Length: 273
Image (cartoon, rainbow, N blue to C red; front, top):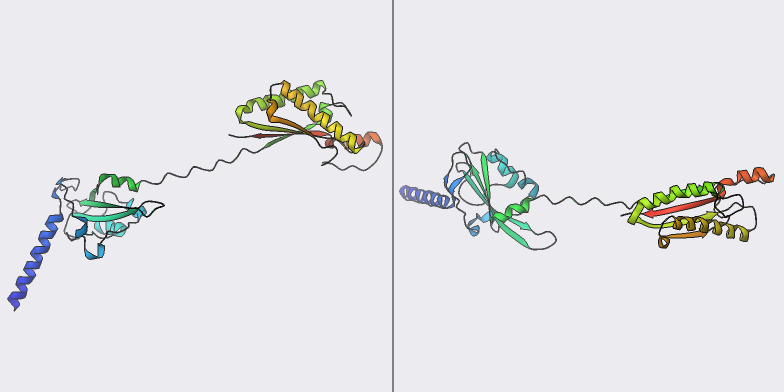
């Protein structure tokens, strides 16, 4: 009976050895950098616990590199999926599955690690070779481009017009020349220009509304004359609404001076890519 069991044990050992030989590549170089012939086991001959292959951790798989010892390799991608052995062999084989992002489609790949005489990983192979591309890091998402902020310019009406007038002064022309040059620099990025005229609270509501509109129109007309596209510019009068400064009633001259910030023309520039 003992002899019988011994014979069985030897037979099993020989069978395992033969299986291993069938899975091992031919003439692996001592430095583990190559083999005279790479032998790939059939995927359906994996050990029972690896039937169907495994889904590897991509971050771990990307860390595979020359010089890792077997415990380090096993920590990253596990032990080999076939019965060629673990510690005494110089080749480990795997069957890995990769799921296509956003779908149930799975790509099956075989992966081979060759070790040198010191059992350090030295070379790595894929079947098919195209599987190597599956390890490529995903392209970083392009940073969201923030829309260009709208620009605002507040021009003093007193710097553009004489008091209670809507005709541009020479100083007003010079101020608008600078603005026109800035708008020209925007080129095709210039989407729109909104000109809003405002008055102080002196005078009737109807009068102030009309004056603010005339001033806004005067600014728009001048900018168009300087080459700003007429289709991208509009003028609005807002009368005495939206004051930026409150002033108590008093003598007219000091009151006019106090209310000066409310007499203004606001230019809002919308530009972007």
